[in-house]
Image 1 (cartoon, rainbow, N blue to C red):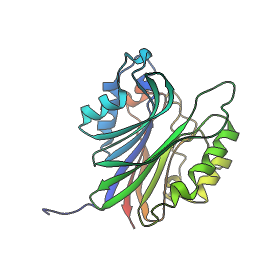
Image 2: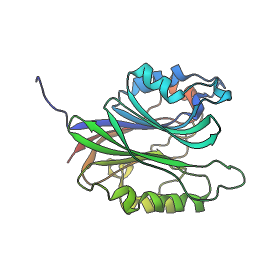
Image 3: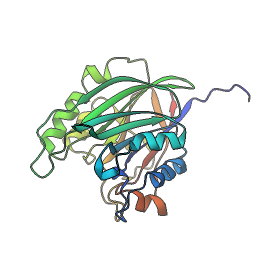
Image 4: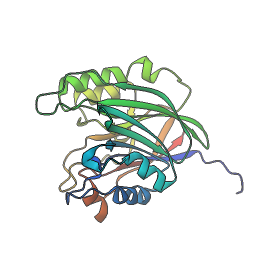
Length: 249
């Protein structure tokens, strides 16, 4: 019907590993192809480079968004002068930055990577949707601190009347303390799908861990959830994308 407004939105989270695949080759175009296959409206990406020598000085989020014809916001988690590394939200719909932060916690000795979170408002067909993308640390203490911050009123209480989606690579298994912290405030889409399944996303060579998650508030409910396993996604990164279709309640 002409002029009909959709009340559903399809979203995904995808750790792209700097666009370096399991074949050790860097390919932004291959990641773009995977995202095109997802047929989503927006996606949270983790582990992207901008102006880094190791990635040829390119803006990876910008390249992918331009090839898709989408809007984007890149959020650095680490900076070395002009070189940036972090996360991004890409969307078919216009988006507006709402909040960004470097996450607290002392990284463990085996991974000194700093972490960040970014929140945007996305102007969808059925109104504003809040989207938060993050990539938590590898140490359990830092992950718990990061979960406590992201479930504070600063992040979850600014617009209680709007649908909210929190997604990313949480480096946390279902039932872990950080996961339970998020579950006190939001609902893991995995727990709302019948019949329940683990939806394991890492590593692509032999996926045994469910560390990529999508949480939603009470204004949304999932229609479907899947791990996007294809021949190209198995090679493009060390994580598979996690994809859900959501509708307004």
